[in-house]
Image (tube, rainbow, N blue to C red; front, side, top):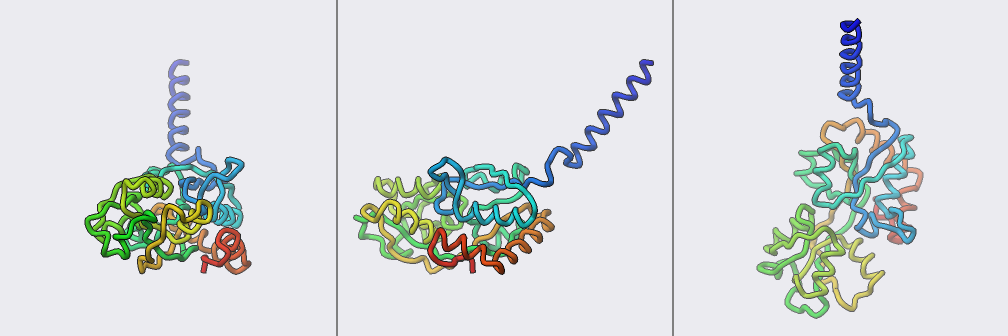
Length: 252
């Protein structure tokens, strides 16, 4: 009797382990998405406390095409790719800029946003008029962001912050000299808060394309995401979402 009971226990443990190893605990009908939730107008908390924004609506529309529900996992930008790699979520939707380094490390979708970078300073700062003037200055940037790399490449010392809102606060307080970011994010901020304390000095000269990112081995997921984006572009959904947030189609 004891031998039979022991054998039954071993069988249950082995079966449980097999199911766990095969990912039996994950719901194939749920798409887990990593996003900041603090980067307006792309991913932020609405007046009702719920996540909203351009990226949020785009990825929800993609999930609808895939027949999946979305579960958002809010994560600071500088930890978002670590979260992706550790399988906390399946996809990153947070204005991920397309570049060669990310192409090597991750499976990336086709672009769903195109925008320009801009250089922003305190309204009283007259010493910075272009990127060359950043050499030796201090810029508030998300350390792992594409815009942080642009600032560092121009010779600016990067002071790491969690996101654009924190960067602007340091800029307004005079604790940093500048910040480089997306023209759409800066435009949303100045629309909400005005231009009495910060100003856009110039464009960086770089046009960036933003994508959705998955782990390198998730090529099938990205293929499905691309098909969904093609459908959303063809039926006008992407243009409609874009116009809602920007008054123009940035999804082209």
